[in-house]
Amino acid sequence: MDLDAFFISCERRNNTALQGIPLIIGGGDRGVVASCSYEARRFGIHSAMPVRMALRLCPEVKIIKGDYELYSNLSHTVTEIIREKVPVMEKASIDEFYLDLSGMDKFFGCYQWTREIAAAVVKEAGLPISFALSANKTVSKIGTGEAKPGGKLKITNAEIRPFLNPLSVRKIPMVGIKTFQLLSRIGVRTIHTLSEMPVTVLQQMIGANGEELWKKANGIDENPVIPYSERKSVSAEKTFATDTIDIPEIKILLSGMAEKLAYQLRQEKWLASTVAVKIRYANFDTETKQSRVAYTSADHTLSRVALELFNRLYTRRMRIRLIGLRFTDLVHGNHQMNLFEDTEEQMNLYQTMDYLKNRFGADAVGRASGFDLENKTTL
Image (cartoon, rainbow, N blue to C red; front, side, top):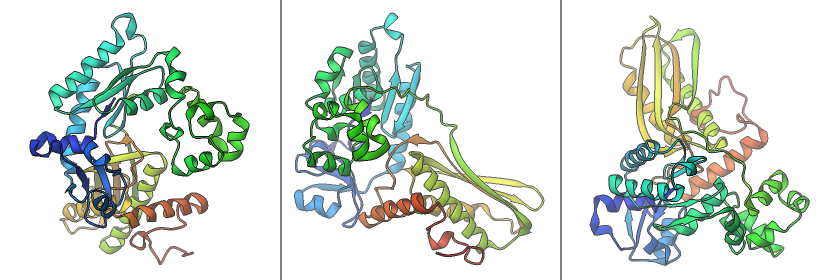
């Protein structure tokens, strides 16, 4: 199940005057498009496009900065509606959900059951949603994309190959623009052509993911629906050898923690929506503050929030024994940045930094604010 143009739908839910007009959610002239309405998409506008390019394609498009607190709250509302009605649910991102209805066909009609869940989301949350019912996650996700907006599909086992074959290979979730260009150069543009390629050839072309890509092109996906839990988190903490009141040094350490944890989120394809900072004083009193944020894995956003929390938390002017940082309320997702605030240049910077970390190690490159230069060797 996938909420249709989620950010746009949230804004229109609160302001009906926005219905039916080209609309984008994003930053200023140097920002990027976080989401766009279907009216805007007809002009060629798409997510992650620079706002200035979107304005050239459609000068009359209306730009809204975005209200991430509203989006997070409505995402939580939809999550609770679905979770109460299904046996197993995975929250794949802020607006995507996988439901495992295995065995329920013995007691209910799965298609009708899913229609009723979609109707409950529309009625109780006021948001449009699409779904595709099929044998596995890959086919369901592709089907939902084809059903949008407001669509409902049922793709049986016998219908999987006829459904997938004519579609572009770009529709397969793991196919990015570079892989698509590589396949296009040898004439592979449809899923049908890709499905008939020898696995060994694909492995030679794109590496270890070749076999997985071939399976998806043939409608094969054995990945299970992972039960959703809000208790998942990533965290780090540091106990000082000697209790300290060196606040600049503590802030450097906190920034470094945020950068490393955010890199871990991106590597494991998680997005966090809550930041928590913990302080333990010399007398062992422990205090914690936390704050909700838009779903993100961008360390400059998470670091800023962590430092703001520390400034609000540290009020006793005592020596500190321990500092800790935790990101929680995680959902799976590939959005590596806060698209409401960040620029195209920052997006490129993250891709480059992660490439260097993957190749040379997590400490190979980082922000100066997170480095203790007295105790680190620079490259």
